[in-house]
Amino acid sequence: MPSYDAIIIGTGQSGPALARRLVAAGRKVAIIERKLFGGTCVNTGCTPTKTLVASAYVAHAARRAGDYGIRIEGSVNVDMKTVKARKDAVVAVYRNGVERSLKTLQGCAVYEGHGRFVADKTVVVNGSELRADEIFINVGSRAAIPPIPGLDQVPYLTNSSMMDIDFLPSHLMILGGSYVGLEFAQIYRRFGSEVTVIESGPRLISREDQDVSQAVADFLREESIDVRVDSRMVAVEKQGNAIAAKIESTGRISHIVGTHMLVATGRRPNTDDLGLDKAGIAADGRGYILVDDQLRTNASGIWALGDCNGRGAFTHTSWNDFEIVAGNLLDNDHRRVSDRITAYALYTDPPLGRAGMTEVEVRKTGKSALVSIVAMKDVMRAYERGETKGFMKILVDRDNKQILGASFLGLAGDEVIHCVLDIMYAKVPYTVIQRAMHIHPTVSEFIPTMMDKLKPLQ
Image 1 (cartoon, rainbow, N blue to C red):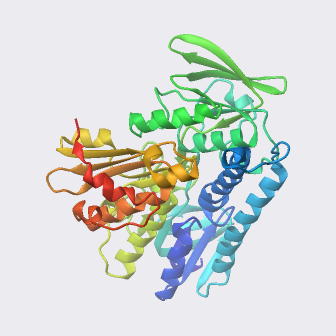
Image 2 (cartoon, rainbow, N blue to C red):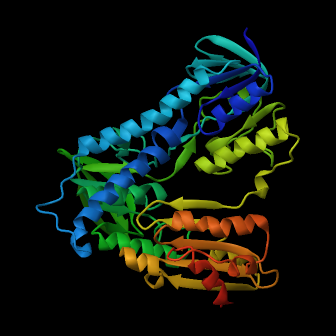
Image 3 (tube, helix red, strand yellow):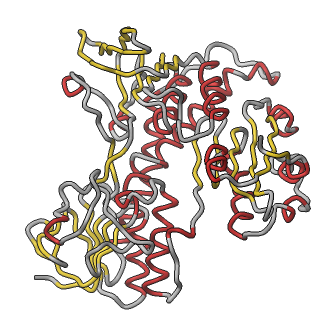
């Protein structure tokens, strides 16, 4: 039985970085990957989707060229095979880079195959049993498929299988009106597909404030995306070469027929075939591995990082998981999951940047709070760019003057949000950024001005 100091299962965002740190600390490491090096982010998540977002943005901008005094003769055509080839090329750079870096890392053995626990501190892969006193689980997640009658009988797509498309769906139906679904909705509408979004809840992206949800729905509808909320898919069936969905909304039944269907109703951890019970590792009812504030499982010497621990579903939270584990294990640096501030983005156009609490969450705390909102149409840089949809909102604790949260829906919102996020981590009053001199003309320059216009949250 090969013995190692550490075994890492999975090569997503956390795994390779941790392997390098452990090897540098003198540990003998084995890392296991059953499919594609780099995990979800590199292969079916951030990297390919944002590459598609970029292609879709160019198509949209080209159609708007006349607004800027630019004349394009003829129609704007999207070559989907070239779009996919570009996406594949970008992905290959990162995936191959991860694989190459691990296979050339001295002190690290790479196993390609499915790894699972067969006993305490023992993992089997390709028939070989590996043992280590320290094991790190970084197995990620996959699309969750809802139990809709007939769904298993139609050729539906997920975020993963969408990566194989090199053609333009005539009518793409998207089940789920949250982050993954909305990004694909706008991408494929801009490529030229007819798109219908079906969301069972009362509004899109329900974790966001009502004003954010409404603004996103508005600009998607402006691009002729059929957005249906309060709409529950109760059945689906194949109808010739098409897919027919039966929808219930406010007690009424309707039918939608499309050529393709994307299921984007959430994620589930890749832990059901991991043999957690063999190692005595506890998980919750959904399969997420239970961890403490330092990402340790209930089994001694075993940690869980990334999507599979239910403590964040983003590349940046997975990377931070690596930093937390490495800090505590190797650097005598006491780091905790509870120290990090919620932060993420929705990569529609315009994008949404989020940090800290929403307005709804602030209200639930009962804190005395202040709020400032500015419409993007009043931001000079956005006006100059002709991209004025959305708004910026900042919430502040009236007593200690610290920023509680922010929602930036608009031009560069996914980047500008970091101005606020860094102030929140510094735990300094908002007056610090209020007195900062920002560069003109930028979107960021309006943050100090917003601090001048704080009003009580009613």
